[in-house]
Image (tube, helix red, strand yellow):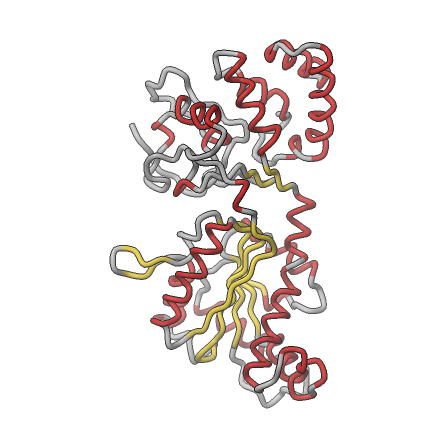
Amino acid sequence: MKPELALRLLGGLMKWEFLRANEEFKWLNLLVEYKYDHYQGYSPGARFLINLINWLKQFPTVEKREVAYKFIRERLVFINQREMHHLIDLSMPLFDCEARRLVAKELGLKFHETWNDVNAERRLRLLKIRTLYVALSDGAHIDIFRRDNEGDVSNEQVVPLAEISPQKWKSLSEKLSKRLLDAEEFSSEDALFERICLIDDFTGSGFTLVRFDNDVWDGKVHKFCDQCVTNGILGKYVKQGCTVHIHHYLASTKANETITLELEKYEKTSSNFSFAKSFSYVLPQDIVVSHDDNDQELASLISEFYDASIESESTKNNIHYGYRQCGLPLVLDHNTPNNSVALLWAKSKDSSVFQQKMRPLFHRKERHIDHGKK
């Protein structure tokens, strides 16, 4: 469908007068071209305006459609590919900053003194060689990270999966040994990784990263560290006391607070690793949508048009405001987080008996496959 026709249909659906329609069409044309049409969750040939029309149709009155449209117009946060790449480019300076902090602490220097200290500079060069970069998910864009840091990071320092086989560890260690020999000044150093950077694109709650659940530690960080210990990797390929640096390109304020608190607790239980964290950008708390929001019309809309059939074993119950009620109005160019408000991404199950089936504006690609509620 041509954009001009789609806009006319949208104007008719919303019953906009000429001046209002002209104003909205200008805004839509800009955002559609710059961001929304490039959402990777759409099927081939699909476009945002058609999805917007179909999404608005689920609300039976113009008044309710206006509330929904206002939510998109004023509160939606869409991170497009260019913006995500910028967040990726901000990662290495943060890794370098943390490395300097570690070296300053090790040598008893002030942070700024590391720039004028020969021993500190040598130690930083060694630490960079003995660093491994590991993707926590396919959303980590680890290929882009590697290419953008060509010259600083070799192919043999980047791993696309957190579950690393013993054979892969052996290969990584052999390549590390070669890099140390090539550097000459480090030819006598042990081929042990002393810093591992775990990288991911986004965290909304921090819950899946590290948590104390049912009296045991769980989460991606714990699983990675536990595998290093139980598979005999620690001491053989990874240095005892290795620093595990967890980095996300984007995070919510809630996730930042949760990860900070839980990592401090987890580090106290671990004698094998130390931990650091960083984020390219933390979303401000004031973007969050909740039932306590001043916009009661939006809260009523979210509650009224919620279908429990969208719940699953992975999301649990009552996800009106997304997984763990994070309430984010967030869409990433390659997918919509389940921490976002359900109205944005949820689709009713075919078996749902809910009178008004939920339709997604930005279709979400699920990482976990389960049957959900019947």
